[in-house]
Length: 305
Image (cartoon, rainbow, N blue to C red):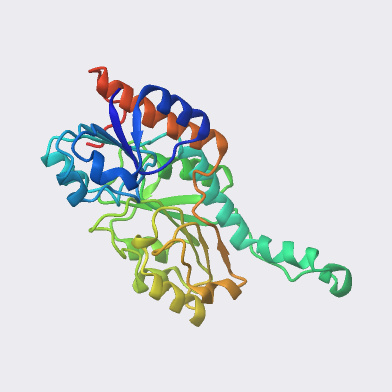
């Protein structure tokens, strides 16, 4: 059987298939098996880092169970002839759904009103103060890839106008392109972030962007925590220079700035963009399918180019 280093588990039903087809080794066994493993199962956070790659002379593929790959040195692996595969497309709907949910939850203060009912305050104090609409607004999207397009469809279906910022205009979308991110923020009620985390995008959503979005604007991040200047975000929320935030991702997960916990204009989620049974199973299956393709001499399904 082919030896595989497994850094993260797959969904149970797919894990069983993986175990039946390959000889699996955990990270604790790395020193013993580094010289024989031919594949690595991981995710976008868990590596393997360059020093581990250097110690695996027979490594032929890194198969990641996530669409993001900021924790994997893809370019370095490529220089050594090792392809890296991720799991695009299968999570598009779930992440787009969550982005829209965070827009609605933050604008309508649904977490706050849920607590209002559960605590018995509705019966004691009467109607809850009014919130804001999430439809008929201006939605700016930072990034217009596969998921950005799905977010745009959903936002449009809610009677919102949609615009976006990316390095260059995307040919097959009907939305206005803003070459400047600050200008997009200035002309948006919601700014939804869905870009990869790279050295170029690190803290791209900075103080200027947040202040342009303004005291009634809402920031939604379903990408990666690193693309937002988290200190500037906290400062903008505390000072009232930013109206609110719906956040699924953070810089140092699972650590979250505790000052956010008490803010009624912030909705927090534990990085669950792809967190459904259906999607996580499909992501796990793609990992297995890429491994099978590699060792059968067939083209990889989702190699990162």
